[in-house]
Each structure stands twice: as structure tokens, then as C-alpha cells.
Length: 345
Image (cartoon, rainbow, N blue to C red; front, top):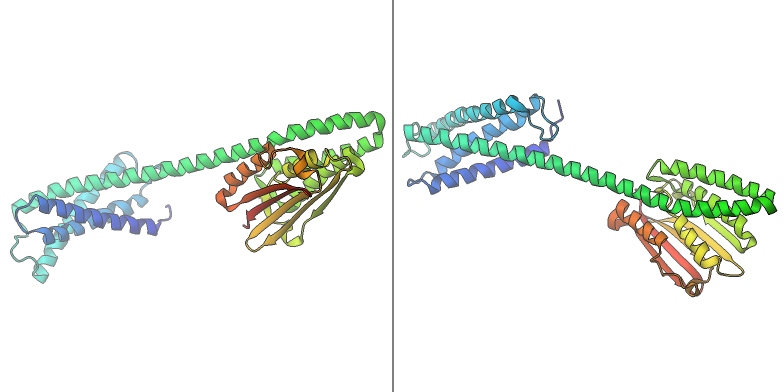
């Protein structure tokens, strides 16, 4: 038997009590007698009994995943049984309360007119209430499925965004590798080793949306070594990862677009090259990751934070964290500066 969500049951009970009050109010509107209080008492007793039999009893019968209600004739019998039980228990309990405590002395409890009216109202209200709860459960189920589908779509979109950067980097690396094989086989071998390590870590990262920051830095180290072979002494880099941040989960392939941006727009156009610094640290309940370079900065002429790589990072952060994460980017005379803020898990 599926575990019962008692907070949901309490919410259903309160909705039932409100519905019973509405039924008594409508009945009073079509009655010429002052019968609101007795109508309210009987309505609450009958409605609460129907709710208890139907809403609690459905957990004792195999139910559909879409609605949480029994299917076919099982569901029909449950509702009809709840209505009959509600009328018999609620009416007799109401009669007993009225007679025991002397309530509503001017009212004939067992009059034929009241009996016919009570049967009709109980039948209509029971069917309407049961249908409303059934439709509400089905609506909640569809909303859950819609959210799940949206989450799967976002995950698939993230995978597409991750793979969009890979071909560009691989083609450039293979082109450089082909040139090195002829002129410098030793460096070509070294480049191939780093490329194998890079591709291995990329394969591991592709199997999950996030991975430890340590893995991201290791992957970034292989990439920078590949670029260092290509650029020689023109490229220097520093990776600063404290132990208390190494195990924190981050989106896979998060930092490479920032480093690619630094190399392509900052260091390669500069004759003497420069330095790339990647550092991470915890700041309260947030993780801060910074990528700085000493490239040409404002003189690069590149878009200030609106390029493909930076746009891709912003889209991924929004898909994973909504407004709880941010990317800040600026260029000045000293180079380019990027800063990512992520919420700690």
C-alpha cells in the first residue's frame, strides 16, 4: 500500500468542509424556512463521512498512477459506497446529536420532505465532490509529468550546449598536431598524451551533468597543456584550487569556454602572450570561480561578454540554478576578468 500523505489529506478535509458549507448555503438560498444551522450540521457530518470513506478507502484498492484513484467499476463502487455510507452515518449521527442535545426543536428531523431532499442533495454533492477531487488529482499528476519532461528537456539542452564547444577545440588541436608531427615529433607525442587525457576526462564528464570541481580543474589543466604546446613560452597559467572547494559539484565543461576566450581574444593577439589565472574559493554559502588573463583586454575588439562561449555559460547556469548563479565579465587595460558565482549544495 502506498504511504499516505497526511498533509494532503488534511488539505482535502478542509476543502471538503468548505464545500459542505457551500452546499448548506445553496440549500438555504432555495428554502423558505430558517434551516441554515441544521442544514450546515447535516452537511458537515454527511460530507466528512463521504470524504473519509472515499479519500481514505481508495488507498486500500489498487489505483491508477495518473489519478491515485481506483479504475473502472472499483472506483464507481467506492464513490457510491461513500455516498450511501455518508448519508446513513451522517444523517443518523445528526439525528442523534439533535435529539440528545435538543438542537433545532422546531424542526422535524425525520420528515419525508427532509428525507427526499437530503438524499438528492447528498447524491449530487457526493458525485460533484468526488469528481472534483478525481480531476484535481489527475491535473496534479499531469503537472508533475510536465515538470519532469521540462527537466529532461533542460538536461538534453545542456548536453547539446556542452558538445557545441568540443568540435572547435578538437579541430584546432588536430591541426596543430598534424603540423607538429613533421617538425617536432617529441612535442607531437607530448601533445597527443595530453589530448588522450583530455578526451578521457571529457568522456567521464559527459556521463553526468555535474562533477567535482577537482575534475574540472584537471580537465582544464590538460587543455591548457595542449594550448601551451601550441603557443610555447607565450602562454603561462596558474590553477589555484583550495582543498575545501575541490570536492564541490560544478557543471561539467564550465570553465573551458572562459579559458578559450582568454587565449583566443586576449593572449594570442598579444605578441608576448601572457598569463591565465584560474582560482576558486568558498565565500559563505557560495562558490566563487575567477578566470583572469593579462591579454590585450579592451584593445581586443571582442564583444564584452556577449560571445558564444559566455552566452552558453549563462544559459547553462540559468537552466541549472535559475537566478541563484551568475556570470560577471569585464575587460579593462589589464586584460579580461570573469567571475562565476554558484550556490553551495
